Length: 487
Ligand SMILES: Nc1ncnc2c1ncn2[C@@H]1O[C@H](COP(=O)(O)OP(=O)(O)OP(=O)(O)O)[C@@H](O)[C@H]1O
Ligand SMILES: O=P(O)(O)OC[C@H]1O[C@H](OP(=O)(O)OP(=O)(O)O)[C@H](O)[C@@H]1O
Ligand SMILES: O=C(O)c1cccnc1
Ligand SMILES: [Mg+2]
Image (cartoon, rainbow, N blue to C red; front, side):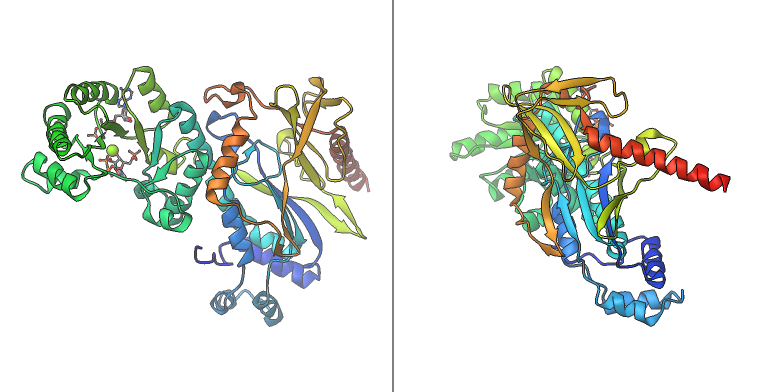
């Protein structure tokens, strides 16, 4: 368990809106928000949802401490004492639905749907977007790396380059969900039970007069898990020969040199040379680990060059989501509860893709019974039923002439209840279960959606009823604006 996240981990405007609602007497009005993203990162065909556990911990422990209240008071913004009292007794009381962590998710799908009073719904926006945006990015990047390495071992080495501590620790967890086997971060190992793994640094070698003495001393400290870093001076002429020398000494003692690590230079050439040299010396069980600014692209190139690499250490480019550093997730109001019913609401934009989809919704994955593969995701009204016995007409939400009829299918609802009335009703899966769930979900998709370059766009459609509701609301809003202009 991590220390609780402060209630002040939010933007000022959330607190000012909470106060203004309280002054207005509207702070307990019931509202609904969706959290989703609009476009996929890294040019990938899907994203891997992560960050839910952190979000759950946050909501369960959300409190204003006396120090937080003192700070708000000290701002001299005229907050009345009764409002501060309200904050003192603040607890999250809302209802939450979410996709399970490890889910394969797509743009426009509600990843979280939250109902509650407007005050609490404002407060939590920033933290939820912060956790889920980052962890989903890293899990997705990790899945891309996993996609190109097949079954090779993947080690997460990014802590030193992460954007601060929380990113290192939760990023390690997200990488594990997305397909990494281990992390070098000890704290992530302790907190989450992720396998930890590591070799040694150049400084270990530099600390000895002779490279071979450094290797020998390391091997005698860790005879069962010796991985030697061979590029401190000269990989081919010094590092590998010295590693072989120590490897043979180990062999005579009945031990195996577990591996060598290459951390610079031409990794394809060096790994092929290293493999030959190790094999020639009879060290065929010694593995080759590579690290050095790797990502899915360099790894793919190294593979096509025939690199003889068994395990990959990936740091900076994974943990910082280097080539797409923000998911751009958003949190938008979709309905207001007025006179005992939910009234859909939307935000208009000149960019049609940015017009929100109003109302309470459900998300289904449509699975072809014959192939067992996903055909499309369908967002419907919350109370809409899909009859799997009747053919289902799917159409593109913008280019509506693009249609397809689906028969012989099953539907999987994607949103799960997480909180009811502020109480958690969801039992947290273990990290192993999340990882396994992610793998099982990948197998529902055709390779065309999974490849890392120019994947096919997976269809995410709106049901006819939801589509109609959205169009009608857009028309209504424009009619109202016109009327108000004329008055
Ligand atoms: N055969 C290869 N094909 C394509 N890219 C490679 C190959 N070998 C290594 N790379 C990549 O090329 C880059 C090499 O980086 P660079 O030349 O800056 O430093 P380096 O070789 O790691 O040396 P140092 O760490 O000493 O600066 C890394 O991103 C590495 O992953
Ligand atoms: O390359 P990454 O994917 O970020 O993986 C982590 C890097 O961290 C270590 O390097 P170190 O901090 O010693 O620095 P350097 O390799 O840049 O010299 C390690 O040797 C890797 O090169
Ligand atoms: O264990 C390693 O080899 C390691 C750990 C962190 C960063 N670079 C390498
Ligand atoms: Mg390096």
